[in-house]
Length: 233
Image (tube, rainbow, N blue to C red):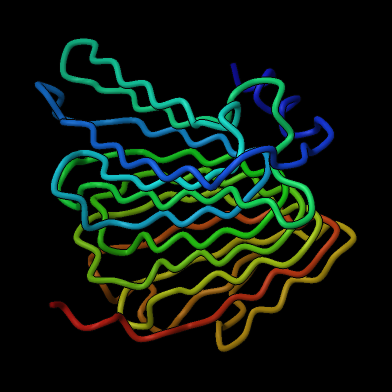
């Protein structure tokens, strides 16, 4: 499926042909105790964060019926798999067309998240999730990945840069270790300290929790920023 969806993201964009469609979707957790989440978006604007009452609360906006996102959820034993994907063979908007996904996941459900992006903008605010693993594959465009938060467990994250700019926000008070390999682009470490083959913050080795982040840069720019965790509401 991943290969097919990747090809879908390379299709030529379509012109909008109708009025703006808005759709809200919710998915209940069911009997699953942990969930794997897969997001495949060929072109558009993506927001991904926590705060859902159900497993998923989502709002979609699109100008062509063929762009209607596909949401599939299956459970095998105690493991759930949630897939949100752009339909095959659609290239997304061109010109003034709008294609927007606002996805909110449940903060309490243990999960792994994999995101494949084609072209566009994305904002991933993930510090409130019970997240054990993150895999992000960027395409063409701009992405912000915010990992600031009050982490209770370790995280392993892998970010594959594309063509464009990515900003990765990291917590000050939780141990962070970043291994970064640049492609043709540039990786800026900000306030992180250099230690052997990695960048670390002052809390690394001191806090009981560690965010282990591996970054492979593409043809673009990756900025690493330390930030204080947002207040708990």
